[in-house]
Every structure is written in C-alpha cells, then in structure tokens.
Amino acid sequence: GEGVTDVAVGDEVLGWTKTGAYAEYAIAGTVAPKPAGLSWEAAASLPVAGETAQRVLDLLRVREGETLFLHGAAGVVGSVAVQLAVAAGITVIGSASESNHAYLRELGAIPVAYGDGLADRVGAAAPEGVDAVFDAAGHGVLPVAIELLGGGDAAKERIVTIAATDAEEHGIVFSGVTGEPEAVRAGLAAQARLAVEGALTVRLAETLPLKEAARAQELSESGHVRGKIVLIP
Picture 1 (cartoon, helix red, strand yellow):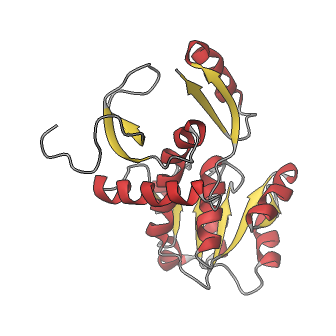
Picture 2: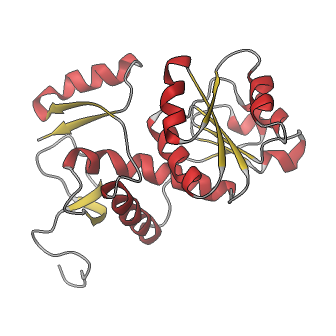
C-alpha cells in the first residue's frame, strides 16, 4: 500500500497479526523481514517470546556485569531472556525443575531448583547478591524476589513479572503490553538475524497442521510441554 517502504508484495515476514493467527490468511500487524535461512517454525516461535524477553530486560535496566535472577528460566520466554542476557554480559541465575538444569547450563545460566529454600539457593549461587529479578513463572515468588534485593521500595524497582497476578499487592511492575511498533519491529528484526546465525534459539515442542489446532490447545493446556507449539497452515 501507499507509504510502505520496508516490505513489498511477495516478501517473507514474521511478527504479529491484527486478527489472530489460527487461520490460513490473516491481516498483518507489526512485522519484520524474515531472513531466508530462518525456518517458518522458528519464525513463528520468535516474536512473542523475543519481544517479551527484551521488553522486561529493558524495564529492569539490567546491564553488563550485573547478576539477574530469572524465575522460570527454562520456559520459552525465560530461555530467550537467558540467551539475550548472557550475550549482553549479564550473569544469570535461573530457577527451573531439575530436569531442565542441563538445558539452562547449555544456555549459559546457573540453574537452581524451585521450591522451599529458593532464596538460600540463589544466594549460594550469587554470593555477592543479585541486581534484578525477572519473574517469568509466578507461583508466589515475589516475596522471595523482594528479599533477594534487600527489601524496600528501591528493591521493588528492579523486579518485573509477567506471571504473578498479585504483583500490584506487592508494588511490583506487571509487564504485559508490547512496546511501540517501530521499536518492536527493530528488535524483532535483530533477533531474527541472531536466530538465523544460531546465536538465539527458541525450543520447539511440537509442530502441527492447522486442522489439529484443538490438539495443539490441549497440549498447551496440559502444562507439560517444553517449548513452543506451532501450527502450520
């Protein structure tokens, strides 16, 4: 259409739709060019996880040399955030079930187990303390996060959750809204380049045809899927 300069008819793109994507055709929303070497499965998996991970890291103002505790580090958003943070020179302590600890080590994080005593385990992994907390899992972790940062309002400023429904009660930022389209598009394009270079990966759990969308939903709701579920028209 008139005024569009960054894509042309026939170009391959990845991003978000304005109408939902359980369909053979959809109206494009915020999109970026898809590198030729990036599979469609990887392209479909990247936008939501990548944008969410980068948005929260930006909100936390976490930077090179700091230590980040990432609760729920083996999930899709968490694992992308681990990779982005490690690449930026940040030490990541990531909580996950024991079965995912080897995976987190592969991504460059220091794994710790969920459950009682979490603060002590994080403290042992980061004896000099943590500088920020990214909660990608919820499950009542916000009091632990506040404790890890020393308590008080100053500590709360460096905690962001995408999962805890009681965030407001604790005075913690809940981040659930995407950023400005231009910034989102630029970030997605950069992450797509990293993905095609092999520097950023999103774990895929299952790829199903569109006609099996109900099955995909059942898998997602089971809570036992490791990675993204992708529907292919």
